[in-house]
Image (cartoon, rainbow, N blue to C red; front, top):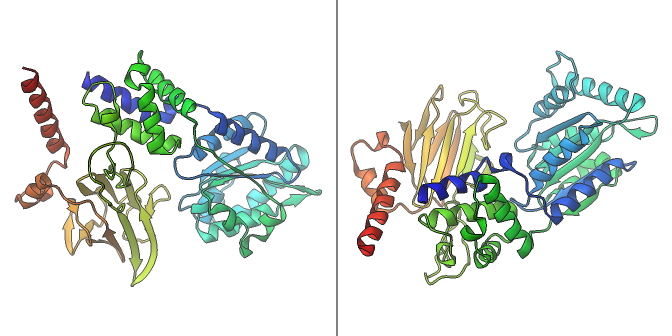
Length: 418
């Protein structure tokens, strides 16, 4: 039963859950209609904002699918996106045949394509998810693209998503062309209690469960909505954690978090229970070079990729850093670093490592960059024993330890029932 629930939970609420099914709800539908209407207007620009896990990316992907039926569309993720990355993705997704690779040449190719499409048919569409997380230099390119026009019509229609800081960003002094298009804005809203129950049950049914109402009774659905604020991304995480904590039985209120208890992300969750509140700040990475702080990164899930590639969560622009260099895995009782066979290796506190547990204040060296760890999870007694072992660097991560704990729990239940 436990293994079955674990598999179902992973399918329904894990990292790849959105590939299984998309559960539409009122705010999702309204945001989609808003963007479609904004793209049809003469100004051709719409902004949707909401917090992490609010469904912005889901709305953006759905918009791209619908608009692509009768328009040229480019859909890009703005996180750590450089100008060349934006322009290259536009060229590739618009299907433009070009050997250009320099930024100015790519911009010229995109401009010619957009103007020609607008003149002969209709303006292509650029959808940027997480626009608030782009580099300033990329935002300047976006401002240039926003000014493209021919025959009194804008040559590029724009749909942008981001958090609440997006509005301030697009109204800044450097975004005059974007401001002149008078963008309209829409705010995403959380799921209602009824929508939360429908969402949880529909996810479990899509994953293969025949009794989703038994796994998630009404009172549990209501509790999970309270914990997540009704935001789909957070709801996925808390639902998956609740299934894990249920030990193979239908989820109950007791298997959700107690006050102050934290998920693997380190966020404090105020919910029903008897445990005393414990305040724990989420782990944070501070990236520096030559003493200058370049950026700060917090965990939004239990994994952070570090590397030179645009696909990395923490992008380090350094010739000595591999495209995908290392990964940090966050657990409730440890933060684990794994070097991903990088060309030049990873150093922690001047010691080269392949795999290690990080502590508060540790310094990771990556080429000419330094990454300081703050608010690392408090290491449990079991993990402390692993650290004292001579083969700590070769340890099997925390998987074996957690399996041992699970076996002890099951054995204890059997003894009690006997």
